[in-house]
Image (cartoon, rainbow, N blue to C red):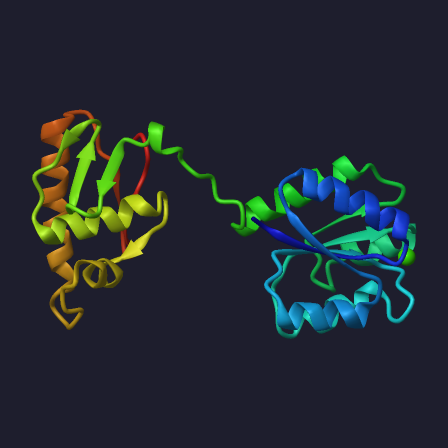
Length: 226
Ligand code: CA
């Protein structure tokens, strides 16, 4: 569940934001001051900050600048004035987006969702019922479209590694590591052989399918439904 820090000195605005973001499935924490926000970020895991520009102790730009020295947490600015928008749009302070007051809490929630999607905090999850692969880790078995695959232990570990993170590209070294094979020089090409064998086995189960993608110079990924 993404955790959102709201930095806003007007309680009524903060209240509507807390409500809208909680309703959208996020947990929230609210601070009034910039320094409290920076203190909170240094001690807690925060996925996104909704940051008012006009704060009582320091302005939101200063808070963002200080934050950016140590952190890449996405920042959504709340602003009331056109002059502030120019600065945000200039992006010199490293903002991810902004909304202008007065705003609808729903609009803020939608922006938050978009930024989280971009930053990867809201990875699309494939419901197990729709997944073409079913991994039975206890028995080291993988089913592909309902058919159990006859895999060697190395093939099992490589395929399980790929399937657990759809679309993520794994280097040969990472896959060797997942398979428990030494990552020393000369072993990387072993992965190519294992992947070739895996593709052949998947092809036997389902002739049209080719869910393992080669990324030249990088490695391999699993593409669901390919
Ligand atoms: Ca304010």
